[in-house]
Length: 218
Image (cartoon, rainbow, N blue to C red; front, side, top):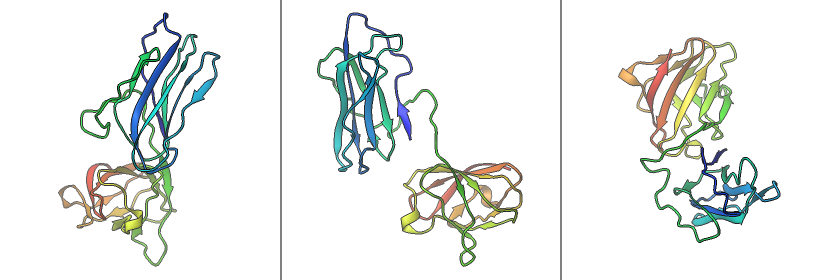
């Protein structure tokens, strides 16, 4: 999860309220919600996205905090969601939502974007080379439990696959684990990856069972 908020918001002393919003599309209930500082200093929030799969305008219009930090308009994102460029105005006039998806080329974000970090335990003995990555993160700590492992397939089944274009990074604390180059894991120059202590391998998925190397550090 992360939050989307302006890095620097010009103040407007003549206004006592603000209006802001964003178009969002999601199939995850509650995936995005708007929040701001009310005139009392408390935080208030909007109705979250219904998760119905369509475009909804997530917005707020209210009297704002006149303190040092102002209204602090923020969108809290906790699920998979497509969003347009957000809009903000002082006052209570109707906002004009942006039309371009931030998932399209050209989008810019400032500040820190935190991605999920999750441990990955070795697969069962029946499929020792088939590793499943949880969908709760983008960076994964590969747990080898003191034994060098082999990785020939990653999230191979349909239910475990990531969306096309997802970038993941595998972190290896221990040396000796080998990621094999193949039609399913296409490594740079056709060279297998063998971990060293505190090494990493970054891959991108094609939305299928196949992955392509982006970079390595070993």
